[in-house]
Image (cartoon, rainbow, N blue to C red; front, side, top):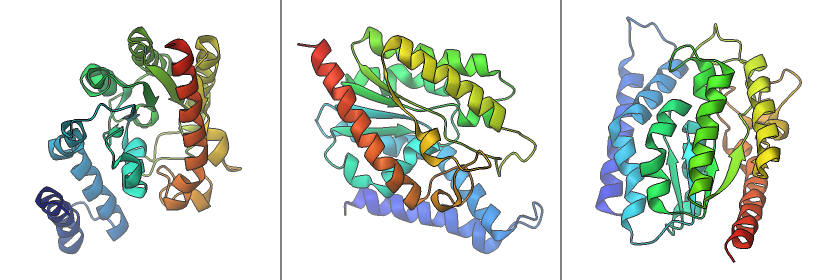
Length: 250
């Protein structure tokens, strides 16, 4: 383990552990929620962004960029070996909306000149983390990123929004109808544009239209079992996108 990684792990440990041990009498949060708040604050800090950027400094040109939010970032937590070689890189940042992703798409995806981008976004918009927004506006942000990629001959693997019955951060939000509407738009758009569409929603949804309890701890983010369930579909979709890229760049 490098010194940089040791320092990073110490920093992460302190930032997450201190609030949990100390508690917060003003917020009166239960321990599990304090942990979620600590982790969320950590990932929203610029430090996380800097660490993620280190993938670009190894001298290799990435072939695949994972672009998205905390669900995208979770791949690096549970399957870090996917990114060890530098050919696949992870540009997930927790808490980000599609508007924020669009603003960094040039720097974080296109500047790397990849062959494929695995694009996921929309959950945080629906949760209201960026303020009130319509499904149409979320859809436009995502399609703008797709068009930017296609204009640079980058193949897109477009991900559905994952199911969620409710959001632990925003209990007043009712996400089910918005998720269904956005996924319908994304699926139809992918068909029109002949994109690879990664339908995680159908893979993980339960009878309540949330993530199945075996696949999540908080109802929003996949757990280790959830990512294990998503992995074969992800790999197959990237291979399919590779085939399309090769066909289009003979």
